[in-house]
Image (cartoon, rainbow, N blue to C red; front, side):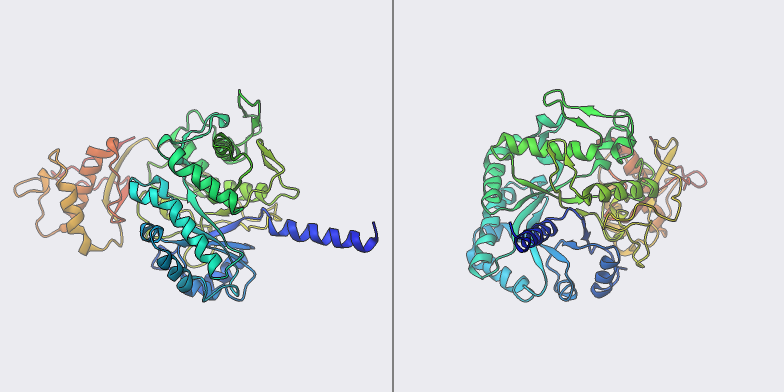
Length: 460
């Protein structure tokens, strides 16, 4: 073979390798009222050395800000449009015309996800509409001349009925035949990916007694898990979770379909009852997962050794308007002011970091009382509805704040709401009640009781 041919082949291989690089990107969520502008956010994404970004919509200001960059972009069709799009070619075409064509190809839109974790929904109509909507969007892209965009959808780990050992991986019975099989057929035919959200944090936090923390954050030196069926040996929880999807797809006849990790990360803070959510663990996990994903040659997983595993780290910012437990607002690599929560970059080339990490203080379950009170900065105009909800759930939750009760302060709605939140949470935590109230509530270990008014508490 001539030197010229060898050079051409070498260039082709390097270009192909770059196209399917395992270097992770970043998820850019926007659920905060204090986040930097899209242009500033794009600069911050670049400062993290991210070459890919995933959006949860098709925000025109962000797509315009990405216009002059070489960042590959994933956009998303909102969940609420999926049912209608599944029934209408014209609606699908209109969505592509409005949200993709004004920016493509100048903005490097490469992936289009139809909805977010749709198969975790209880809405049967929405779930049934997912694959038809994916087909409609793919048809629209093709008919409108958009050639380089892969269509997919993101799935949470709860689509799996069985995940341990990994060789037992199997999709839930309600979705396996009617939804997953045609979805995998579609993804395989279009050479797309199965996009999955993989969070070792949640798996570990639900069972910290039986899952080693170091195994969950890629720090284990002596803990391994061997699959008794395949004899594959696992050195971290991330690989174990990924391979459960590999075997689930194999069961349905698609052993080689590529996987893309749509989300992975570790929370840097959380509520008092959320074990292991701290800066030390978050930095350790994310640095290690970046190192693994960006490795050259690719590491892969035990079931797919040497295979590139593209991914997006969750998330760019700590987002203060996300609802749910405290961890939901603390997955960011950056504070809203643009500073890093801890040192990190996404090229995988940095192996040493200058700043020492704060020692973790909540790697064990908090032992003591916790109360649920109105959060600092909560919108007081919404407290009335939340108070009514907490008091309407039975169990005499709010008797002490009724007229004549020891906690009755008719002019202090905030105090009444705090009592109601604490009482509700103490009564219903074991059956799924949370200290959230759409972001109006927060946990505290400082007893808010006063005088004869004793606030109910939770003891973990």
